[in-house]
Image (cartoon, rainbow, N blue to C red):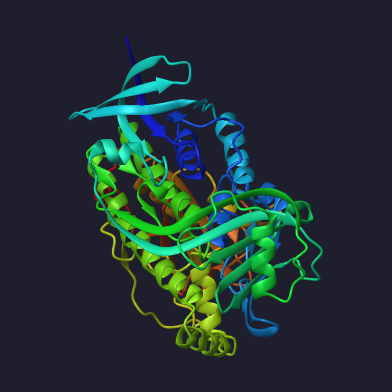
Length: 541
């Protein structure tokens, strides 16, 4: 007997779970399997950056994550007892201006709870043995923990099964690989350090670096580079104590080792993210050094980009060609992440005299340049990621005469850039735009500027809904007081903050994609381009 599934996700880590949630939110309940155990507590990834917190907020999980983790605001660099630089990670344009230190297993637990609430069942102890892709489906062979085999036919097979991905290997998708020849050990320990617990601390020594991060329960995560690419397989307290003593002024009396691991930094990038009905996400598609904390975050953003597109295809509301945009949009992003982390790792772990002097000089200079810090903070928070070159986005935006109430310095997010959060008002009081846009689907935001006539607003709203053709919701934001006659989806922007944030100087349209990027913007009330957008998307009402 052959079982069937619309979507089979291999891997129930953060990437696979985000994808499962995004599909389930849109009525597609995927099958998700994992070769591991339900009680496995993988803890390598420890950082959730601002952009991922925004994604979790969209899923209703951000506050719970913050309550379980340690919010961090600063990244401090030292050489011995000398402070070299301080990076303010709160200088990011986000409603979550912080970096959250939380064990990966806690992140997974939150995502699992949400997925299960939506009807997703995770099948533990189940692995992919082989697969055969066809034109209309993929036949897969599964192996269960009890030794039982199973044949399953799935419409779409997703590899979210890590750097040693069986999906990628059985599909024959090749990848570019490089060995950075840098070894690392990491572990969670108890120790009495007089360090501020709202920041990262990175110490550079002659033989390498030691980075320490505050963890919940008063523990500290230690990440230390090793002098060669042969770190101990199971690092113990003595290993961590030795590196702390050698490279930092901190007390080396570490105790109560909770967890430890070691690895050699390697990087890889799959040649393609889509091969017919097989798609790769997360570490299965790309892996790199942990320096910078981008790995888990990048994987979750892969899933956030893919989920809404795959749901439209599976439910018959878009052509399969829409999935080509997943690779077109995400592969340049992950390629840049791999290159950046490679360069950063080499710079951070360089031990020659020239490398150490160059690093010290660069950090001191960096610490004095606020614009550079702000850009790096936005890069660190993944807020510089954009899809401006994507075929899925376009705009009809022209320079227009500034109004007395407008901020002429702000041009607003371009098509392909992230939406910007701002507060507007309804009859109950202030509400964040990001929460207005939380419902799955596209959102058309009509900035009405000075238009006050209820009949005009109602007509615009009706025309906008017609242009959306059932693909999402319509919201009208006016600079004036709300109309006396109740009208759904109308919000007030009495101080022009929303209009200014979006560079609006006359009635304009912003179409926000489900992953909260701008799909289209136009500085006129012309709804034809909205219809054009959905035609370009390949969407069908």
